[in-house]
Length: 352
Ligand SMILES: Nc1ncnc2c1ncn2[C@@H]1O[C@H](COP(=O)(O)OP(=O)(O)OP(=O)(O)O)[C@@H](O)[C@H]1O
Ligand SMILES: [Mg+2]
Image (cartoon, rainbow, N blue to C red; front, side, top):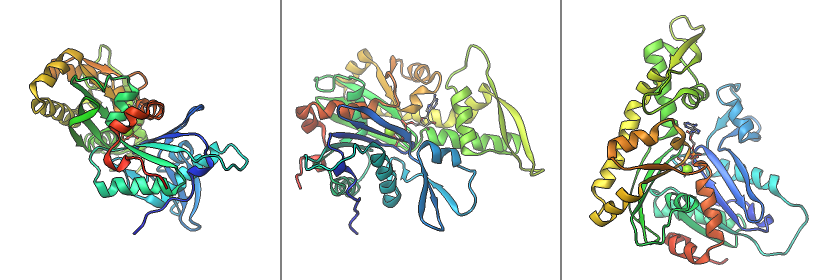
């Protein structure tokens, strides 16, 4: 089956960088900056197949829809699971950006990040879809590389650096040197899994059914990876599994930490495992330069300290970790040489 996107991009005359994430979609347009930064959620009326809402508006509908309205997240684990809905989402965003008028000016170059663990077939599908959408050139970049560049990691140097990107669907760990990824690990334990951990904890400890949005709110408001100086608590609302009625209980940071502990341990263990197989020269560099963290998961309180405790390596959280990746695509659009070096084979320049 040939996967095609409509001619979404040909109406944009400027080069474009895209972070199509499991949780959030960000679009950078050269000369304009980050113009889209919204959740990767779409609400569809299943009776009419019409799109009702996209992004923030659709996320607000999560868990609150009547049966004929479906809120979906077209990406799973950073991979496009539903091309049709992804296309609709991107079309909606590009329509919002459309500068009006018609032009025969050049079509844009597009740099798009993809998860490091996707297959060549999946990568080709993304490439072809974006090309068919009206791009002049499509460059595919591994997400951790783009995030590292966006965080100003000196990726070109013959020096070992490590990045840990914790997004919604995946935690990607990559060792970088000389503009290449030396080795990497990717696990499906990240922000979404943290939310599920909180939902499970509420069921098991309080007989309370809570929605995913509520779980995410609790994670952001009082979630942490290490003990806090002051306790924090938050009202958790859901449905009592025994009475079937709405109920509110207070949940505190200790309980949320307990809920997240297994997932956090798996992340830490995978970072350690990656360091264990990293060649000694590069490990020595990493010890000196520290671990860089990006993605929304880096904002979990104390996650940097948890990793430092476990590895004895300093951790730096990127400035604005949620936008690091798309800022990396912006830098690459201005640095053709680096773009050629870091883009994967399928991202090699293809003209149509
Ligand atoms: N302050 C915060 N504390 C903890 N988690 C947070 C915070 N802010 C955002 N997050 C989480 O970060 C995740 C989104 O991060 P990000 O936008 O980097 O993911 P993504 O790029 O869409 O996903 P992926 O890279 O896995 O495809 C969500 O799970 C969100 O709940
Ligand atoms: Mg991401």
